[in-house]
Length: 388
Image 1 (tube, rainbow, N blue to C red):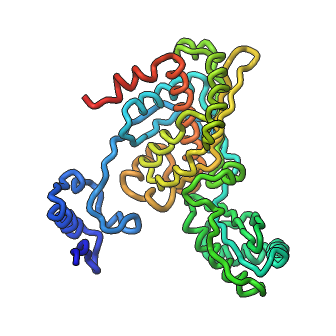
Image 2: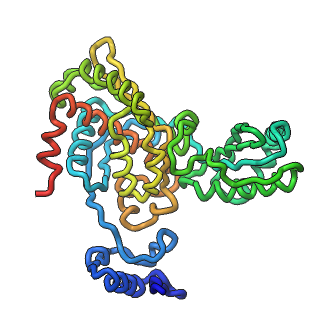
Image 3: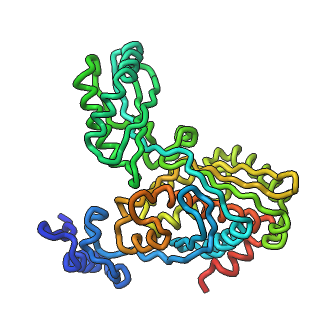
């Protein structure tokens, strides 16, 4: 029988047990883990974030800015930490940040906020499922009260309903304060469902999720109805500034946008922009977000126009930006430093972080599209994106 990975039932988060695991796997694979085992954080600080701790994955981190953000929660110039191993990414976002700042800044707005769990209830037939849906509407206040017994910050906003055969899908929409909230809403919804099952006759069975919450998966439902924060970043860039800084024009960018919309439609893409996942992922790693949420957060809708003066209006709508300033990886020491750098550590800062990420994404969009049109895309990767 294969040997099991070493564990310590009394204290599994110490350097001693981490070293034992590194030694164990090194012997099994004839591999050294010198860099994995070189870190500054206290292993005890990782409890609740990881199991079988052996060390760290060190991702290079760079800085862009100043990036001017004109948000309702984030206002001013920010220097944004971004963790990535893709050469040219930081340079491109930094160039975009300069352009946005010289254009007066990115106006960013959080227009919606909801986190879901979507249980499904099974009945004998469609009529029974329909009648149950009416009962849910009539008893929403009590369902919400039951759900909210499990959390101080989660609030049940509403319950969407979807019918299919003898099934009734309920999409519980919560606000979750400074937390991303997937675990929070899972627990709250479970308690509510148990109360429903005890108080409504005729339910054959239920499952806590029927997959309509699309946790860590993209869905058109989330694009339409929001998961996490729905963030819109927009800017109007003078045409002369585009020509002097980016070697392109408002007209060229607008025409390219029309072509790309068609290409994205034909490909069935969840994003009509250039590469918002690049910026989102890099900031997520730096600030301790759950990086798997990029599966949802990568969805985006671009809208562009040219005004009567020939200037370029660009907006990006991120319908499912799942971010937190509390809980999960945000409490780790490195990530705390990055949140402090942005002024986003502490209570009531999650919308500020969402606005900064929205502006960062917009900087990357305008930079990459300009590089493609100006012919700088390939040459910049040749210059900065190769290990030499």
